[in-house]
Amino acid sequence: MKNRNIYLDKIIALKDTPELIKVITGVRRCGKSFLLKLYRDYLNKQGVPASSVIYINLEDFQYNDIDSAKKLHDFISGKLVKKGITYIFIDEVQLVPSWEKAVNSLRLNRKNDIYLTGSNAYLLSSNLSTLLSGRYVEIKMLPLSFSEFLQFRDVGEAQDYREHFDLYLKLGGYPGLTELPDDSDILQDYLFGVFNTIIIKDIVTANRIRDVDVLEKIARYLSSNIGNITSARKISNYLISTGRKISADTADNYLRMLENAYCFYRAKRYDLKGKSLMKTNDKFYIVDLGLRNMFRGGVSSDYGSMLENVVYFELTRKGYTVSVGKYGDLEIDFVAEKSGKLSYFQVAATIIPDEVRSRELKSFRLLGDNYEKTILTMDIVGPYDDIDGIKHQNIIDFLLRG
Image 1: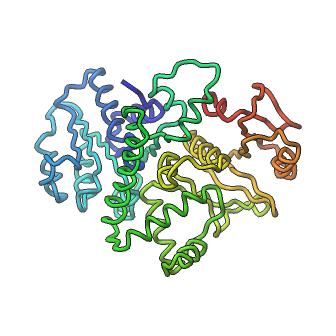
Image 2: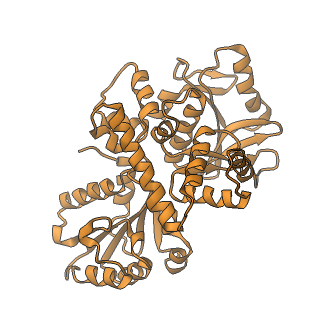
Image 3: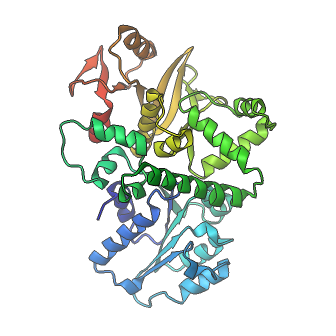
């Protein structure tokens, strides 16, 4: 069986902590249900009997009658084991209204170890935060990294991963794609189905939206502007130019809906002179490049923005809080913070032309601090290559070896 060790290890580390509810979040079909299966297999190998594991997938029709917090609570309560710990898995828990009341009640029994999944950030809304404050831990899940992509496609050690990387940029990292025939129409239909599910189930239905067309246009606009400064005002002006008049406030609401469905991630700008986050003009990155290519009807010719998108999510997977750096009129692609320490990253397809090399390094040279600075490119470089103390690393090496 394929593995998702980066996430499985986090869950295993939290095993038998009934005081904490484990909440696994992420975009539709990124592998949350699969992760629960991996964890159930782990429990089985540890000698946990099947009767001690309760698994409910609320998208499964057999649980269609569980439509209230009381029914959810009663169903699970009737299956709790009398001796030892009961491991409770509830998939897509947000489908039950007021589910947090049932979960909080079950949590009071210190013999219940609870794991939830959800495809919408409303899962961690104010109701849950208020009721379960300090009593849950979130495990944020993403589609496959490039390293996982190779594993899922059974690619072993290779001298040159470039061909596989190009395929990753084209297909993206949805695990389900690796089980499908290599047929562009089938793959396109799969990705369209993913997007349609995100739009209909996690945004339109949850927010009672009537104008789906505007939502789709904003998603396509964001997909076409990966790595560019974006604002609700810009989106409003764009829609007005297409004949759809909406306010900046309405555009901002749609933006947040797409974020809450984990379809797009916002990188705020960080003023490196003022040492503070800026309030306007953020950047957005799409959770999966396969979705972006589906929107655009083919692989984007904007190679640099695709590389930037991949690096953004790799830094996120590594546990960094990622923002976009601004230093005067200059920009640093990513300011990555972890444990109070900063690291700076520039991303470019190549820095072989002298003018490109000079432009990409200029921001770094003006910073004047001692934090690690790395420029990531597709150039062939040695493992210890640096330019005046600035680390130069191949992007594929960065993705596979850190």
